[in-house]
Image (tube, rainbow, N blue to C red; front, top):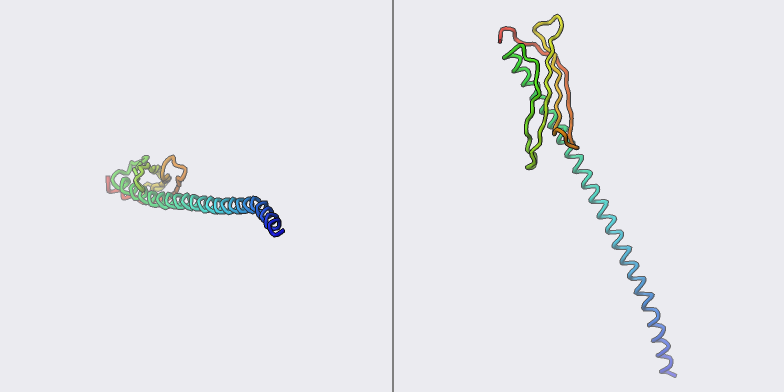
Length: 148
């Protein structure tokens, strides 16, 4: 009888092992799924933050280039009062990638004020990029009539 009882217990333990193995496998798969979802979320957050930083960098660069375009226009007007503007391009090299930034300078005379010019400046940085930024400004400046 003792032997019969051991066989019965052995059969009960053996029949419970596949169910236990299935439960452990299911728990392991759920854990892998949760870890994968957390990893995917963290990766998406990192990529979004990177894009935001690139856009902020482009916005700041466009602002700096706009200031440079204003200075360039003032110098050109002081050299030549007939200067009407230009499209000015510069090559940028952030993090080893060459990109083109474009500044559009338009100069118009101010009616009834011969020593003044209205400047319309637009800077786009980097040109044609998904992360490009555009900055613009209108201003009126005095020019020195004694300089050619």
